[in-house]
Length: 478
Image (cartoon, rainbow, N blue to C red; front, side, top):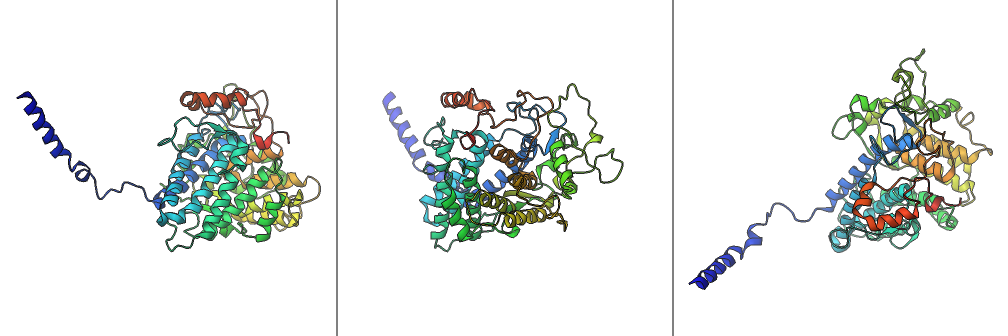
């Protein structure tokens, strides 16, 4: 009898589970995400989060702003992020989601149009990651669902110039766009509204950028000349790889959503105050506000980075806050991926160094003109013949300093280019927690040591114990 009950129970269970998958599948809820939705999410999430990161932590490292309090990061204790300073999860979350788009594009012919943008975005985000940290998990990363959750760290050299690395993905992305002959449109594209030519120009401007970044390690002349001769790169502000913020939530710049105390924590750096004042640069009124205790209406004042807030009394009224474009009027602001101004400054440097045959001054002046237009400030008629003029003396410093000013929304970029070129001349911070050294890389976050310890330990050993003073590959021995 006991066995009869068991047999009856098994038959009943089989009957109940026979159509289990069909009955419990919601036909109105798709199992696989649409690449259009994911592309929109990746572009927006990465752009929104890294704009905030670049403005808070990046602007401290690049010395565009100074933190009055919660400023261990500003004093170069980079292992203590405050109000920004931990971009690692932003990179890996969006690279993971982008990998899904790339996989869908390769497996389903209906999604082939997404391969080019996915490869270009992968190259773009990967470059941002490795430029900040150096060697990082890459070839085994973004595959935790079917490979490993403890990926090895790849060398920055292989990430840049190896197979399926940054330069390779840009080339493959361009090839995928050029070979696409389908009729299905690219949807979810908030950078170029589905215009594949926009993605081609974006990719070529990124090739210029990353070739210049590694130019101390690799002969880049031939490839740069080919790109310039083809002329298919971002050449005007109307072609920029950007999306607009709004004046109100939910799509305004995140600084507008900070409580007033957090916003007031960031004031003008003495470094940029001195540079803009020396240039008599009218962009100062777009990027900053006159300080409250000023005698006249248009006085600005900056504070040396890295004060010891526990031992120094500072009055907010004595220093300039950042401009209304970053808080009250963020509808005038872009999430900036790549622009014409940056492209022209890079080409000016390439011409200066003899990598391409072009007029340095013309490229420089175009970059300045486009930068003023980008920030919606009228270029004074005498700027390019006066303080902002290009000349044979200090020519590289002139180019890089103008690029640094223009890139305030991308503060990490200013710091990266300082590491690469030595310009602009950043100041030693007031109360350094890094032995008076300006850091040259970001430290790996503590969760890596906890969750990926074996591979982290190797990477930490290669950076003198995860030191922020060990140069990355493209920076070493320059």
